[in-house]
Length: 161
Image (cartoon, rainbow, N blue to C red):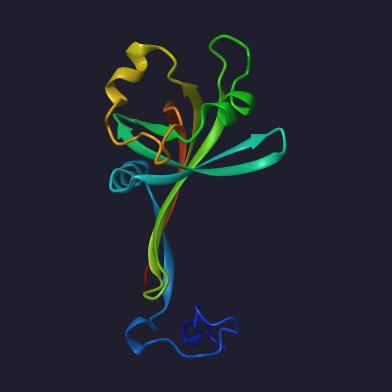
């Protein structure tokens, strides 16, 4: 069955889509500036890194700060064990993935930003992000912030052909 006739919500993919969304989609590669613009419209992403258990992707809240991404993480203990090198000024490389997808319209975008993860440990580093909407959603979990300064972006948007 052609892709434009599949029902993505159906396990078999056999039902037809609404005719208004059946147009063929093609990927559009996004540049760095466009990736940052799209990231600035969101607040929820995934932090992707290699932990002692293998590849890991965890939800985080975020905001853009200049040309970097500041993450509010859920629990410092999780990130301390796997995202600290123990070497001064040496940071782990991570990826931040954010997206906005509409499965019914078969449209959306995603951005993957890769860079070093720097923990904001001092009060001076943390101060601008206290009460900035990056606090954990769970009561009693301490706020922990990580700054990712991307060195590489990859983004795609689905658009009509």
